[in-house]
Every structure is written in structure tokens, then in C-alpha cells.
Amino acid sequence: MPTLACRLVEMEYRQSKRSSMADRATHRPLRPGDMFYHHRVLERFPAWLAPNYRRQNAHRPPLAVILPDTTLFLVDGLQYDSGSGYYGDGYTVRGDAPRLTISEPISDHPSGWTGWLRDGVLEWE
Image 1 (cartoon, rainbow, N blue to C red):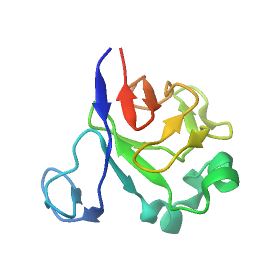
Image 2 (image 1 turned 90 degrees about the vertical axis):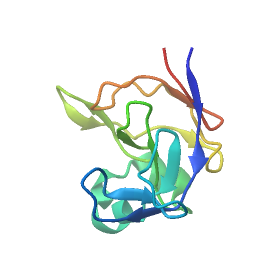
Image 3 (image 1 turned 135 degrees about the vertical axis):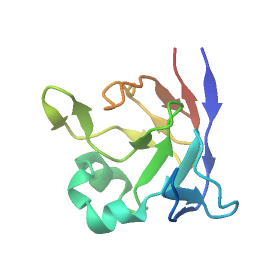
């Protein structure tokens, strides 16, 4: 089973042909495994945040991670089904970034990526 350790980075927005999000320390585009506090979701898109985030983790900004397929996964967001749209209470997220664990498998990402986040490590088949 392939694995990828997550690392906490500070994300910055920038103008680029390839990516609008970069690692503030290196100014390079975010890479798979990069985890960051996504302040903009809290400010501009609060409806994207799951009830579980509000109940369990509202003491910190929402977190996102770049998946191995290079898509963004909002850890504290709602689950998504291509037929039904967004649903449920969100994932059960425990731990401190970057060593987060999501109790449920990540199986409903719009990109089709399926896997797990366990103790800060992404795992997939």
C-alpha cells in the first residue's frame, strides 16, 4: 500500500499559470502531502464546513491537504457523492496538524481518490 507523510506548510496565494497556491517558505506550488490551514474557507465559504468541524475542531482554522492525485481535500468539509452532492456531518478528525487521523476512509472525493489519513500519513491502494 503506498503511503505519503503529510507536512504542515503555510499556504500563500499567488498569480501563476500552474497553481494559485504555494508554500510560503519556498514559494513553490503545493505538492502532494502538503497540509495547510485554509483560512479563506472560513472567511468566504463557511457553508463548505461540516457540522463535525464546528462541534469538534472549531478552535482551529479549517485544514486542507493536497492528495496524491494533486487535488485539494478539505479535511473539515462535507463528504461528497457525485449523484447526491454534499451530505452528512463530515469526517471525524482527531489529532493536531500535520498528524491528523480521519476515522472514516476518504471515499467520496470528487476526483475519485480513495484512501485514508492516519496519524498524518495518506494511504491508498
